[in-house]
Image (cartoon, rainbow over the protein chains, first blue to last red):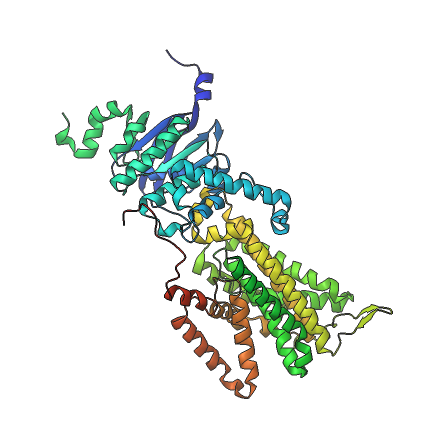
Length: 264
Length: 331
């Protein structure tokens, strides 16, 4: 049954319309139409250089699109600065485990509580009771998030001393601190050991059960099992879309990954 | 932990008490002069470090001292205002200029920021030099001294020609400035700056407005530089643009690096040593740049974290490492 326009509007959280990004003469993303519904976990896959991370950077404002639009919750957010996209509720992680290396794990998350609650300049300097209450609340919240993702045992370690897998999970914890309505995970388990993957998948399963809306980019097929829907990009174009099972059977996808001789 | 904190606080208290008693032992005006100048530069270098918390090393800080000094000097002289009012105004003037020229500068980071700040500083000094109508052809002379504090029957402090009142004024100003800068560093504002310095990608991904926060750091740092510069103007009573030029800005960075950027006390130690040592060996003044250069080289090679970082270095060598190994990690 076809859905009415209003129903669709209520469902869709993120939508791109003919989103395009050129780097010089190279189209990294070309005329991309995609959407993420509320409560959905969508995977974005594709060979190296397909434009997956560029899509993330366009949505979060780290890059300005050459053309097209990004709509979040029905509002046009095209070209907004990164801190502004965080403010409207888009949290993200990075492919390389970007973190605040000289802060402890707890400080990484505490520093990420910048928006909610927000403290003023003077109340911070004069250490008012309202400010102290906010800081106390933030530390409690940060500890809760770390428990949620499973990092509660390493809260006082310097972030740079963590193993790679933990650093990536810390990135997720940090993104949760902005209370995101949409979470973008850029290769959340790439380069992880087997144990670390199990560890991360546990955290993602929890997020899934809480009904979070997630868009993720990944090479590792292990994570595809938690996705509701998968989109495949190649050379900036969307070449397939569907459930994980459907995408696996898709000829275009097989061609893109393995070459035309493997397609039936 | 509580014990260590207590020892430290006692240490600070002893140093502060000694500084308050200093004019009892140091009676030679020239030595008091050195202390006054050192204290003012401690404010400037500490505020430079505050800016650097956000990942920006400004090579224009002396110029902002100059804005404070000239602004306060000129308006107090021309309009007859009391320096007690014009000194804070000098700080505000430096802050406003920092916000105006700082905002476009935040488009570049790290060493590129330092390079454009250098040009900004040179431009400021040249503007001061060109505005001879107010700033004087051969320097600004006739700046009024701090006005006397006179409460009839209680106290009567005259500043003109006296070192001791100026010493106490500078000491109080320095202590207040350091307390404020310390507080800013250790609340959320400082944490945000440190986050930006470590990764501007991460910082902006959690909603931190990078440009805004960096301009805030410049505004705070330059405010204190302006205050110190203005105080210097009403102490020295004469100003020349060269005091605030390119080389003095470089020296400020050097004081900070020699003292150590990682610790709050770094600029204090660095400035105290590098301002006082050359002054105390005045007979060797011709060799001062050589001595400073030698100290710089020694520090860079032997103590990359500066003199204040030396304690950390020693502690690390004796195996007192801050971080345990991660439990459950494979490696």
